[in-house]
Image (cartoon, rainbow over the protein chains, first blue to last red):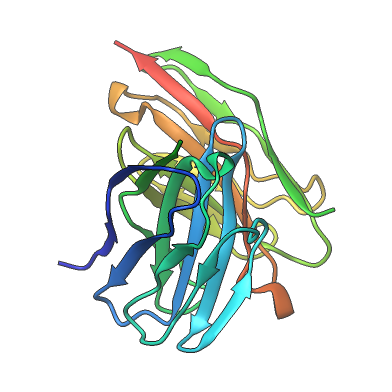
Length: 112
Length: 114
């Protein structure tokens, strides 16, 4: 089954403790992207990747890192999480950048 | 700057009512426009899209027409169902060097009562 898989689905952690949210897609898609969803703000793009080893900043990249060492994976790294990064995070992918995106089911992060 | 503006929600309708959710954009150039839907507890799914002026996207009874003269992409459905209850997001993408950037509106919560 074609899908975008995020892990973990839920995480409660503390300020400053490094964490990684993984994202994997099995559709051989070139384009991948991370978003955060906050009440009243909709979705905002954090980082995106047009292909392997190519990443670019979105609207709200501060406090996040990404890597794209292989086509299927696009992990989101919070080196030193802070409470303002408490949010619902979505990973998405598409075959080509101009094609519609497939979204994962989301990861709810709570930073205390 | 460039942005997508959606009508404020929530929107509450009775089954079989007519739905309009307004969306306008500000952008230089000619963006591609999308409507995504998010059902409770799920990720977003593409509902419909339009890539150039006067295009009409349609899916599952929903329609939206790309109006360049009014910079709008309003979502409509003639007769909503309870199963349409969800959050709807308008989004746009520019061409050129920012092709990878996708901008979303704030979302409109729709609740349909039987």
